[in-house]
Length: 274
Image 1 (cartoon, rainbow, N blue to C red):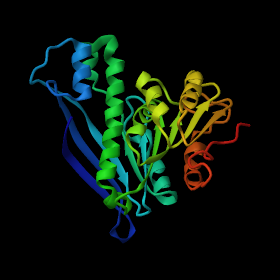
Image 2: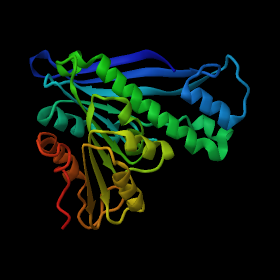
Image 3: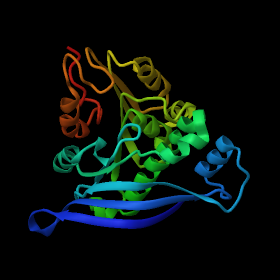
Image 4: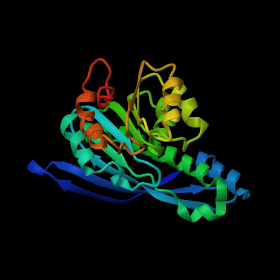
């Protein structure tokens, strides 16, 4: 994967400190490379290796710095813009936990016709690459973002983002805590194999009326090597945590107090199941 920064802007808060930054990075893959996405594209499309490149949607990062030594990387649902986890989420994390790094999960829709039914599997690869890119950027610029060269790293993923977090979290020993919100199966078996290798704290949050409820339970059961694991099923809520209790905002609001819980970080953010 080739990364080329193409846009950077920031918003200054009080005291001329950067309260919110936006970064857009070009992503393109040479089809003769050993990159996972390139190999997947060749497998799915049946093309022969060549010097041809495919252009993926840019890697978009919204960065809310905080000199706490902690970074929360958040990945939204399938084909979501960077506001999948919006500015309020970023500012809330920034004020109560530490730095927040939000990303988008955009898919290369121009490839849908070329890949047909295989498009979703390819998009699962895009989700994983997006999360890896966000984590790597966060760690490479950790001191600038969090004030520490070796920050505590928390990963949060919703739906496809949760599937991606489950798949790649074990690749980053710095990621001590992960929260999977209504995780889907967009990254396929890689998600369950990945979370089976993860050794940090795991929390799975899923609605009782979510059509992916059984999948959420499977993620929890697969986290056999986790230092601790927790699953919370919110009655009356569907995939987007809307329903009788309409608790999605509550879930986001409680992330702050959860991450400072010493017994099970990122667990107690779950609303009561009443």
